[in-house]
Length: 585
Picture 1 (tube, rainbow, N blue to C red):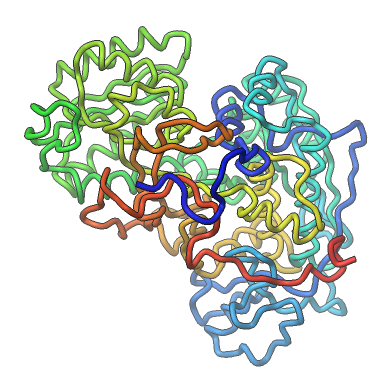
Picture 2 (picture 1 turned 180 degrees about the horizontal axis):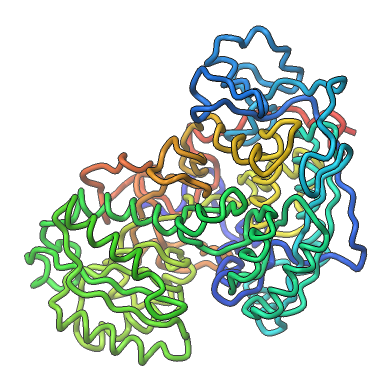
């Protein structure tokens, strides 16, 4: 089975190629160092760039209807659906073959009808917006020295100035490529006064942002909800890493102000339900490590990490009800623990004892990336070899952590992959777009973590049209035109076009993964070794309702560990540098 594919053979690939994204995200989510928006200097005001002549827009009905919403930008796709495509001059930077801007990424910003400068932009349309500028607060984390050392040991670039400058570079790039309707960005760096788990400091930092009266904020502390809750209460948009895995009801409750990155927990559960319901319920546990279990009908158990007792109780109740009603499935035993890496052995003893007592053949893992080491080792000590289902987790679905788990156990692990099929770091949108626009590689190898916030914020501004408000930002995002799917990039949509609940999160699709203990290659930090997470069918991704009835688990000749060139269908267009960009000269 393949652990790599493409033409990048050989050894000695560096972290510059395979950036330690997993490690950085772990520190962001579990430990609390928010590198993605950290850094900066003592100068608060940093001016952004101006506008371009086209970018994205939307119509009502999810971007594919014929009813035009006059309050937001008109996208190429909405005009085409309404039969008025020929009435608009789309400009030289619009690729009329795709209806998207000439940017070398898949699913670039949609083209929008050019801004009429004579008509004006409505001036001060909402807080933080004037005729001339849009004020954005950029959160600068306060790094914990020990935690920062962990990240640096993993190979991540953590220089605060470089990280912060990269974030501002992306903001400037998207403000130039996308339409800002005659307004420039006024980016104000807000320095944290405490670590990411410090709720008191988070509340004080949120007040600093409120005092600036910005339109939106990017980033925030990763270990407390106080920051984003305070901002949205003050009606400030919070985009990107403002919150970590906020449940769908919470996001909808504060709409239209919170715009997280990635699927929310409820959406991940929809995928897991479909995967298990179609492929596993009522079938023998054929992938268990114990031959005696392989002939038994599956009995499901669930191991779940929490930050507080009963954190996911309502969500879990919904899951189990749906699992029973729609698929005839049952969770025989659920074992939860409060995440504390120091108590890993104690947690593991309790978890495995509960699973064995309940006769579980198949354990679903929704965990942190550290304690599973103890859990799998304890299972081997107790001579217990079940199937392991990789469920919605915090980076337990990575090679770098999978190698730390007991390999006798993890060689029977398969399930849901929330991450994209891995690829050479230079192939990703964050690298490609930066090099294309600036004529050089990104300053830090954590660029893929930094990229989503600026991208998402400027996309919403681009789609909102001249009358920029939180409501037109929302309506523009909800009208975002349908995307193509790939293996190395996610399908994004917002609104009511796909999910039963109103959707404010990105990344609608997921993939299938399994662990191959014999595959060799580099982990997410560039370390060569044995044992890799493989992406089934090359990382093919599935939207809700699209999961197949079977997959070639543990026996897939097309499984991929790392792409060293983009797979067929994922290639990006080759465009010249953006007019007026640094790369254009």
